[in-house]
Image 1 (tube, one colour):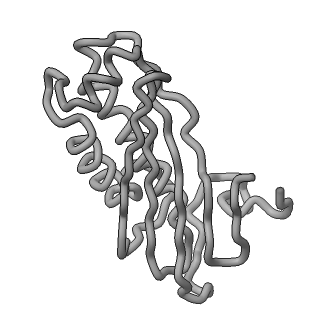
Image 2 (image 1 turned 30 degrees about the vertical axis):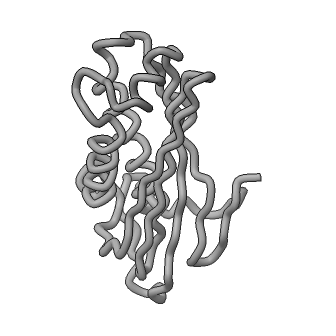
Length: 159
């Protein structure tokens, strides 16, 4: 954990967008994960493509990519970034009743893409919820977390 001045506050303590103009553009990468817990039956129907609203992972993938591209519109102090790649993968564990999403994002910029990867997971997971709520109203979105970040001043890898 780093400590130091709070960069998103001005001299009066008001929230502000950080000025990144003096930073060098570097290759940035981030990967995040979200887990959606549901009944085994619901997970089996997702895996078989038999959910009432259709292709759960296909629709959630598109929603996740759209979310990553609109991060600066949803997170007030986020910088708009020229994303060069967003990828979303799914793992369905029918026995455990889980759908796990992993999203990665890349850019060449002055600030990182962690929020883009995490927002992709968040919206992708909420889309999974929306697509299966008719067969499983007790779906739970769990553990949206950053797994990796590279580029900039420091790298991070979840142990």
